[in-house]
Length: 466
Ligand code: ADP
Image (tube, rainbow, N blue to C red; front, side, top):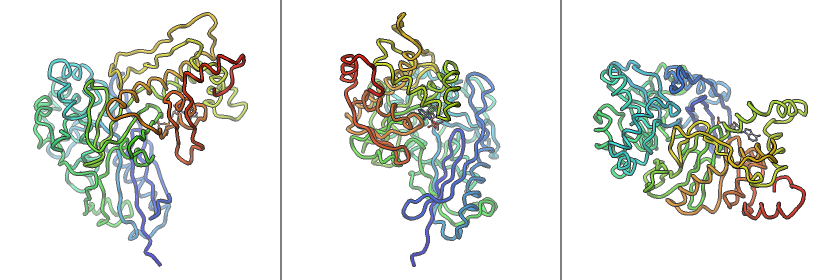
């Protein structure tokens, strides 16, 4: 009988850490997740405690191993994924000088603007692939330098959450090319820290983790942590990549012409290119996966969070209806939206309620309804909001298309893609067939959005999901 072999994946996300055990054929076994808070002491700050996240990593691995009851010797490797753009200032003795400053933190907005306007930020973007924005560690380091000089002066290592955790496990700071490529400090041509970006940040390469490929293995796990997690200390740990880059693999959106479209709380369009590519207009990102797989795409703030806002602020009656019927409140909203013609009878919604990243990169952007007239009713507003979210993402897809070529298939994921009506809308607006992970049900083909509008206008009754 073949020797049993198991593989453990650990995803260090913004809301939780998840660990999942797989067997040789990719079947999912035991899993565990631990949630933790995102602290927002001010409107701009969005921080997390790295020690809490480290304990969540330990806890999820321990719980997964306990639940699975596998022989620890059959665990062949542990591999990691994490959110991008986090920055942690660490002192010379390994002490924490800051919390993990997350992608959602906008305290560096002013500094990002200055880098863009006065410090040749566009040239830095063209070399690093990271749009110059408050989210990027480059802008955050400049913020620390200028506004938190006491922290900046004491910082021996500017780590990200994954390198912080690997330091706990193996005593060295290492960062994979994927996470590094989203710092704004990594030159994708020579796969090394970018001297021009380091100069702007006012730091030297010795203050950043050692760069390694995403397939890099570390062995010799600290004995106490190995014992706590219930795994052998010589099991290889693969550093892995960023969550977005790995999501493309998970969705099978890796080949030419395939675009991954994710609409969860936020949203993103991601394609894979065999070589790094940037946008002369600076609208898209270019992040590493492997030496010949580069993730070209754009991320928006205003994804499902806007649908959630609609539900919370305007749909109390619909939420009640859903409760009464025992259905999902989002299904009630999409059903109502389906009663309105595509195009919402001329009503347009700009979904920039939380500022916007791609494609406009403007933290001060705000939302609006445009074209309201007396005949518009609540259902038009619901449909316009949904269309606004999808069209905003479509404009990102158009920018990505200019860089990597037109996709021929969309692989959708995220909470939004659970709804058949929303999947169909994605297919119609993007003009491409949309498939979803098996657990999300059937794929849908595209019908030109304009044709949908024509076909609806030619009938007297608005048909659902036209
Ligand atoms: P996250 O990005 O935080 O991991 P999800 O991928 O679960 O979250 O997406 C959450 C969002 O997906 C919600 O805010 C909502 O807008 C949308 N959503 C969740 N369930 C549905 C559904 N059944 N139909 C339509 N949209 C949904």
